[in-house]
Image (cartoon, rainbow, N blue to C red; front, side):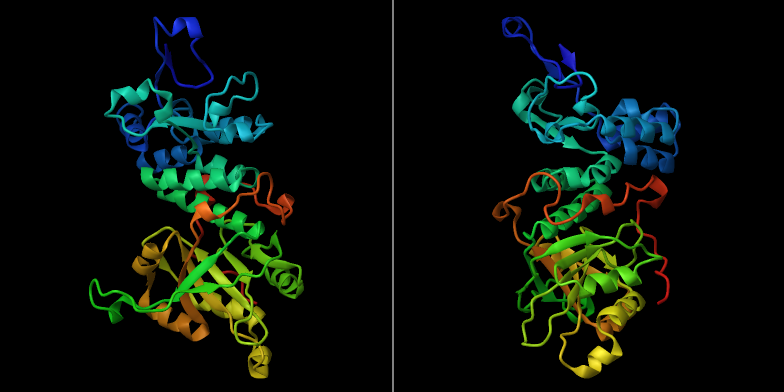
Length: 377
């Protein structure tokens, strides 16, 4: 039996005479070869198609990208129990709960023929970035972390970054985000392969609720309300184009002064841009001249959050003039979160945040944060 889904199975009496062979979902490289040679798709068209379809050849080759998006929307609307998407096992569901429309199956090593017929080698993952963004708050932390690690190993950088960002939002909302940081040092100041000798310390995140609100054009009042609400300690924007930072977290005081915030930029890339003008606009809210002159409040800090310590040490913030200017606005750190093995995931929606405020997944053209600045205060 040749199958593209685990929603079929062999009966026990059939196993003596037959075996089930998986026809896995397509890799991005193979979809590109097929799309270019047979369908004459342009590279940009294939990028857009893959953003919606993931490794499904059926969806990838629909007439238009909008058709693919509509197909994925239909599949998402048919998910009643999201735990079926997260299950790492076969499913006998039928009808509208066609989980394999979204949860695709791959093998780890396509050069090993045994992996196509042995279920323990089959990997289940939601590899449509659009679907992951749409289902983000319905997936638990373990599922998001699995999507991140798989997409990183598969070379899907955009999906890896989206999953990693949502994963950290989830940890923060569940009060399980543990951040460590070290002060950023410009590469030009270090010799090649010279180890860092800077202290790694914990960024002590305050426990509390999380909120998703505000956009790149309407954020000032939202941030002021969040700043003044003692019950809320984590904020991220209800849009996908907020520049320079991904979220803001309130910190515990380490000096006896009033505590302040950390601006978080979440990244899995080897380099990332920083914008001092955006930090200046954030400081106008969290560290105004009056607050600064009073001298009783800790200044905000900026943390570029990476997956691990080695990524922190390798990260390059750019361009150098902007980095130097940003360091005049606030101290600049690189950071990482504690290993997921030490975190107990909370199932269901984020326990300390209303899911109604979350933005819908963006269409392809708006999936990346634009480089435009947010409106002036």
